[in-house]
Amino acid sequence: MSARPQPLDLAVIGGGASGFFTALQYAEVAAGKRVAIFEKSHQFLQKVRISGGGRCNVTHACFDPRELAKNYPRGGRELLGAFHHWQPADTVAWFKRCGVTLKTEPDGRMFPNTDSAQTIIDCFLDRADELNIPLYQNHPLSGIARLASGGFSLRFANLAEPVEARAVCLATGSLTGSPLLQQLTDLAQPIVAAAPSLFAFNVSDPRLSGLAGVAHPKVAVHRPGCKPAQQGPLLITHRGFSGPAILRLSAWDARAMAEAKHHFPLLIDWLPELKLAALVARFAEIRHSQGAKLIRNTPIAPIPRRLWESIIAGCDVADLTTWGQLPKAASRRLLDALKSSRFEVTGKTTNKDEFVTAGGIERNSIDFQTMQSRVTPGLYFTGECIDIDGITGGFNFQAAWTTAHVAATAIAIANAPAQLLQHDHSDAHQQQCQQGAHTAHSELSVRPQNRHAVEQVGFPL
Ligand SMILES: Cc1cc2nc3c(=O)[nH]c(=O)nc-3n(C[C@H](O)[C@H](O)[C@H](O)COP(=O)(O)OP(=O)(O)OC[C@H]3O[C@@H](n4cnc5c(N)ncnc54)[C@H](O)[C@@H]3O)c2cc1C
Picture 1: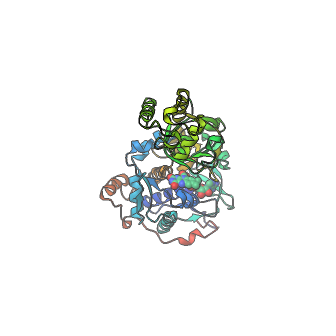
Picture 2: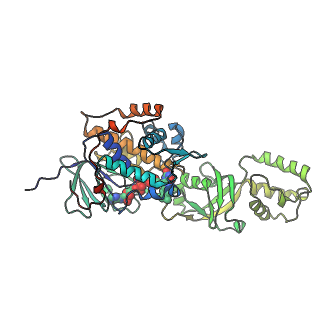
Picture 3: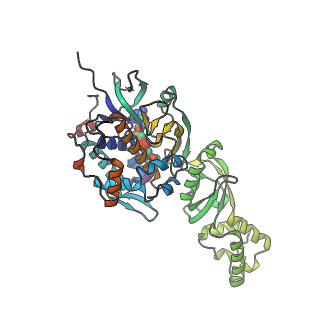
């Protein structure tokens, strides 16, 4: 009779950013424990590959947890505590320890020095190899059941026998349309309906005709009667509006916009740095000092010239009107248009898949000190499958790294209370951040190379 395979200590479901980081973090602290990654597709880390335009915006140079948490339309409050355990400084130090240096761009986004997402992928695969973590692609999880004896029985579509694991970490990314939704419902795991976040707005309006490609460095956008305005650059596209201000608004108002089926009015303040009274004064000053100049030829900075021409045409200001000739009624229309232009959004433009999905595992159903389900002990969640999402700038990956670190540490403690841990992780990190270096590889238990495991098809545990 063949011996029954030993259960895994941790089965990580999903070979994306958060799945890899969970497995790596776990293997780094829980030496000798059995962890494996199961990925449904034929390729690991696919989203990392296409992230940041192929450069991978790994994190953001924001090292104050409170400030950092403000960049998450959903989940900032819950992540705040977790950021005290793993924040961008820890991410930077970890990658440095693994030989990957990150650089900071003027807007705070951090990328690998190589400007290539492949650097991050190679880093993860090499580290998994060093830590002897088996990696199984083409292994979609299709069933999960609790065992009376503790732990879980996992069914994979292409394996005849179930796999047993003491702990399971779901790192599956967006749960939209996932067959796992039913499994989670059966486990009584509360789930928040998915809604797209971080998308561009479709607007068909004669005022935008011929303006595709025009960029404005700073506008304020908001929906009437809704959350505060979002400020930042705006890009006029062939389909409407995009750019950081629009993406931010789409993130903060994602759920309400989904309820409105992405049809809503949008107000744009083209000069957010000037209050209405200051703009009125500016008009008076221009009329006085440049009264003979054509309005068309004297845009108010920083409005780009072509956009300015379109705005004044939209206010029925004739082409050859000078500032001195501007009638009062037209002046009022122009002030209104500059401070509050209204457009009708009639849909959203997505970039193949949604950039990020709001919704997923309900945050209240997770203990954020461990990332463990409050309803199913032993089941953990990391990354985008949770109802957490950040604005653009590296915040979504940071949420993946942070939740993965918290989960991995908690699972290691749960699985090996007596022998844990090789080093006190959080203290070590404090020190490493201060020293600008991380724990040496030699401190960690390095198991034999297992690169071949990436290619294998069966389940040889
Ligand atoms: C085009 C694009 C660019 C982006 N750029 C950035 C960026 O530069 N910076 C940033 O911070 N964020 C970026 N994001 C967001 C970021 O990619 C995600 O937040 C991040 O990938 C989430 O990681 P994850 O591991 O939770 O999920 P994923 O990366 O989606 O990984 C989940 C994995 O689980 C697998 N899986 C799903 N179901 C199963 C199953 N049943 N069994 C086994 N495996 C399963 C999936 O195939 C997938 O490989 C970008 C997103 C997109 C779409």
